[in-house]
Each structure stands twice: as C-alpha cells, then as structure tokens.
Image (cartoon, rainbow, N blue to C red; front, side, top):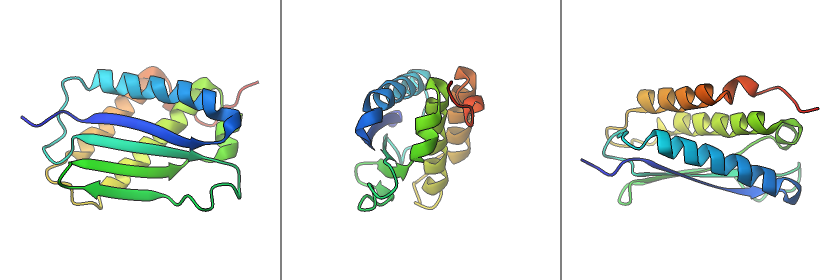
Length: 145
C-alpha cells in the first residue's frame, strides 16, 4: 500500500493577517490530516502542497498562481490566490472556509494533471465532509462584526 496522502500548507500573506492565517491554516491542515489518518486516495499522490496568496491588489502581481505535479516524488503543488478583501472581512470560521474553497479549487486543477489512479471524486467529497462537519463551508460570505 502506498503512503497515505499528507496535506501541507503555507502562504504568501500580507503582514496584517499573517497570525490569523497561521491560526486558520494550522487548524485546517491538522484536522484534515487527522481525519485522513487511514485514507488512501491512490498510488499517484503522497503529498499535497498548497501555498495561499493573500495580498492586496498590486502587491502580488509577481506571484502567479501555480499548479504542478511532480510524478517521481508523487507531490502536487499549488500556489493559489484567496481574495484579500474576502479574507480581511471574514471571521475565523469563514477564513477556514476560504482555505477549504482553495483546497477544492486545487482538486479541480488536479483533474488536468494526469495523476495515476487518483480518486478525485472521493478526495473532493472528503474535503467537503470535513469542512462541512467543522462548519467552515457554510460560513463563507459571512463577515465578522
């Protein structure tokens, strides 16, 4: 049996939100990896690396979105933008929801990468199950205050 899928997250984040992002990211990453302790989504993928880009307009113009699959290492790598104003106006759970939306967008892109025997449907449903179970996806669009 192949190594089980491990989610790893980081970010290119505006300094005003670095701590809030770190808190949200750590919780999403920890809970998903814990929930997937016994999950195998196929032999073609061992690591899912995701870097969020949350910067004001004009700040991240030199940081393009990236989608890559490294076949030999069985690693998929993404750098994806989360809207700065949406993250800024969101409460803690809605920020986690924005991270989960980014995860779901990356799964959409995985479908174009020819990852061997990857069960995309089950991966997507597991992300949704965890996010909905935590109440994160239902929080998107709600603001604090």
